[in-house]
Image (cartoon, rainbow, N blue to C red):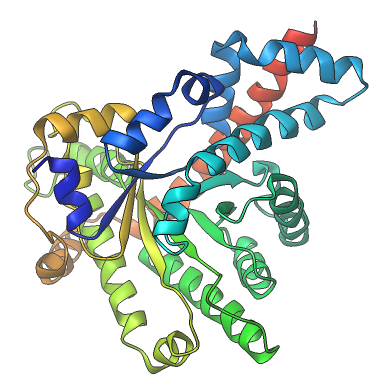
Length: 362
């Protein structure tokens, strides 16, 4: 049995963190679906910026749309939603076979709306309508301003990928927003069974920042490289606590679906670490791991899958976090800074995407 099949058998859904017209037209994505247990795709502004800047396959559309009077922003919307729609169609069989759980393709609201609740709601509704596929997920950032948007969009029947979650505290708030949206929907006499959601918990960046502090103040600390996985384990504990609550059980009885934890930023940044660690150490039922193809290849070639590697490690995660606090590591400060940096990073990528399109127009 392949490592990828073992992951799938253990309850972890494998999604690809990449999309491009090149990948769609070459058959690369179809091949990953057929042979590598890939059951979904995530995108973000950085992925689209890279795809459009590196390929000539968008040039004709860009020039044609510009000639018809479309603005740069309108052209970007057309290019990205066309790719997402095509990917949704490619995953339709997966979507149907999984009763809507997988076969999902995500597209993100523009990052300049990260602190604009009403703007996020309006744009999410627009993107959902433009893509016009049942298996699209609209990505909404888990900023403070994003929380009421998550609730409102869920209440309106939009399936969401909540992105940019770094702390367990914010993850709990995201889960609460999802439940509030479902409760409002139920109160309005609307069905719950067609609503799906994932909560994207960013992993590797936690280690990057915590390791820097440990290296500065505690060189050679045995805590190095422990924070990110422990943080994700505690997030999964929060997920389990939600699913065991009477509040959730009441919604589930009416057809509600889990908001699955999704492990994002799972490519290893510190080359001294095992390349598969943010996959094989984060395996449990009802989870998703979205990974770049390089990480997927590493797991296929070298991954040692040991079944559920989260549930039994939750007590140890609490010990690790206590030790980090005693070492002077302020996780709350780190996760807040990471959220700010991530929003800025995606805003930069979005601006680069606009500039790349403008360059093609000339």
